[in-house]
Structures are given as C-alpha cells and as structure tokens.
Figure 1 (cartoon, one colour):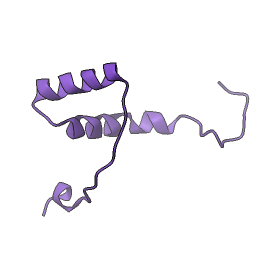
Figure 2 (cartoon, rainbow, N blue to C red):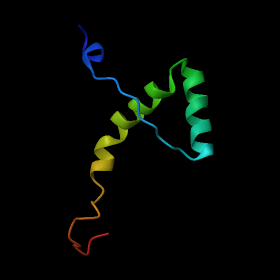
Figure 3 (cartoon, helix red, strand yellow):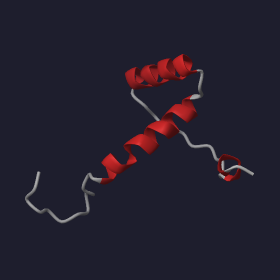
Length: 64
C-alpha cells in the first residue's frame, strides 16, 4: 500500500480570501488537480520557510 493510501483522511474547513481562492482554483484547473492537492503541495514547498517565522510565544531577541 502506497504512503498516500495509508494517510489518514479527514475533513477540515479552511478559509481563504476570495482572490487567493480564485488563484488556487485557477491553478487546480490548469494542472487538472484537486484544490486539496494544490494546497497540500503548497504546504510541502512552503513549510521550511514558514518554520523560520518566530512563534508569538518566542522571547523577543531584538532581531527583525
């Protein structure tokens, strides 16, 4: 069984600004993919960059 078939599937509502959702929908149509697939791939690509952002609970270091 492939990893994707083993993954847990569950529903989750996500809310996007209208313009962003239109862009995601456009890209999904262009690639003949689902919205879910596009968002999942975007997360995989962006994850490392997002993890660089400080948490609101991190102590202030004076760095930008």
